[in-house]
Image 1 (cartoon, one colour):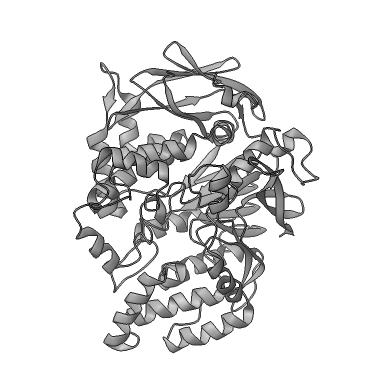
Image 2 (cartoon, rainbow, N blue to C red; image 1 turned 135 degrees about the vertical axis):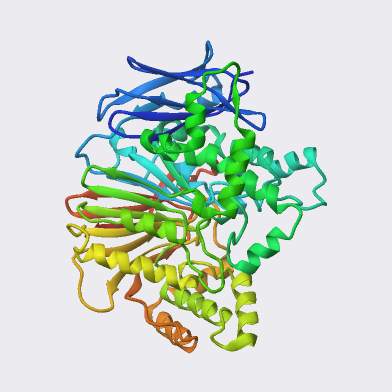
Length: 565
């Protein structure tokens, strides 16, 4: 049996460094060899699991180097498993200064089989279809990607719901049944860290996706299903959860596993060094393996109860051509009915410091679309207004019921936070925070349909184009009964009518206006954004079953947004 449980995942990569993450069967030393570069790290333990994060330095900018992973003295990657025989060697592709950035992005991916039954229920996994295309195993209708080098983005940004803790697959349910009685709370939802660790294993073990994650650098952020549907919708939602006897283990297990599996790899060396727990891991030189279970659980509990004590958001620069700012729009919420906001004061101050000009393109990743279809936004702002008392006590009860029942918990349902961020963006776009970027572009997921929107200041003009690009889902299609509603909500006339509704709730005018300019599309998609002299170009890719073989889908282009900005 191999000593590698999961991975390798290629995480933060820049021009000269690369970080790789693995889970191993036992305490060990993990070594990565790439050309003439080598680096090693000891594993650390969390609730009986063993992980290592290995950072290679001194790599050549713009290089593409095959690598190998050894656990102690055992070569574990490239894998000897025949399931990987078709795939080319995993490589570390460092960034090349000045090369136009190409980034894949998307969200919402369930982990179910890729056979006929799974495909019938959930469609083709767009991430897996892209992996097969990258590997040269299947074909694509994309005429501009014949060169294998053009198949590969510089990184992929996953914008939430990498795992579904509340809507579990048959495989996950079987694992739960082996551990506990699913007739008792939390039923077939996840209970603790051990179940999260198994869910990540299911999500990342398919050979095609595992190969993709081993060779395509990734950045990630959580959304609600990583923890539970509608996570932190409102004060009453949170009160109801905390009144149960199972929520504490769930939220601690969810955030602790997120720290291990997703958050650590988002950070470059400097940002990781600022993390107190990581410093303990990196500095440990004692006997055996450092077990951080208790310390990590305490961090997760503290981050949940006092979100101002820990920041999940992060940012990184790509020369002067782009800055990517990834925003936590779940854990940092202020739910106090008197002071609701998507971001607490500390998070907003951090975001304010990150949203600056003097780059060609400012990219803002947030799992929830900042620019929801206007009609949906206005409905949500109306719901918040009456829930907070615009129509008196009877309206408050109805508003709270409606926002929990209808998932009214996007930026429009946190109108104060929406206005704060909109004002900052207008300052950036008008050149009051350095040279105005060509575009300020929000990248989002969550809503299980994809589209492009554009915003304009309500008063005056700005130098930047303000855009919203959504790619959702990667694999978890919107029910057909909801598609007509979202298509109607994307129309400008519907938005105007919904604005009248928000006026009835005495919601003040927003500092921007916006409209859906392309879409919506309902395919399982993985989008790719590319920066170039003509501006931003984005295309959405889906997998198509060919010759009745669902396991080997071809890549199909669903839509393209050309030369924006």
